[in-house]
Length: 144
Image (cartoon, rainbow, N blue to C red; front, side):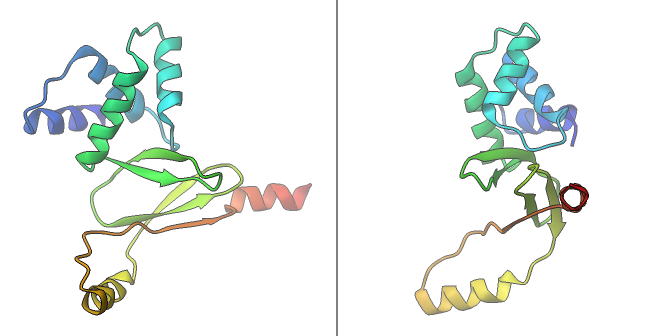
């Protein structure tokens, strides 16, 4: 997903595209790995931006609410953000280097239906992440 698409999505729901909001969107769209709000803020500050930390956090929360960003839980208990691509996706998270690999499809729908019936709970969604060690880190570990 590119910055133009994200900014257009914000306009589509009636939000203004301020300079700081544009800077945050452009910074996150240039990233490939999961990122934290602090990493985005530090990157903007290093580039000479006056965008405040609160603006970064608010913009990220807004993008999560619009389902343009997803939160990825890290093995250390913190979370990062990733751009969401269309479709039903889940993540594999490397506990060594932090690489995140998206995958589509899961067999959770039947379980969700069963749980909803059994508990009378209205299930509105789910989040599935697997933690492990990616192939690159396994290769490095084997070489050491």
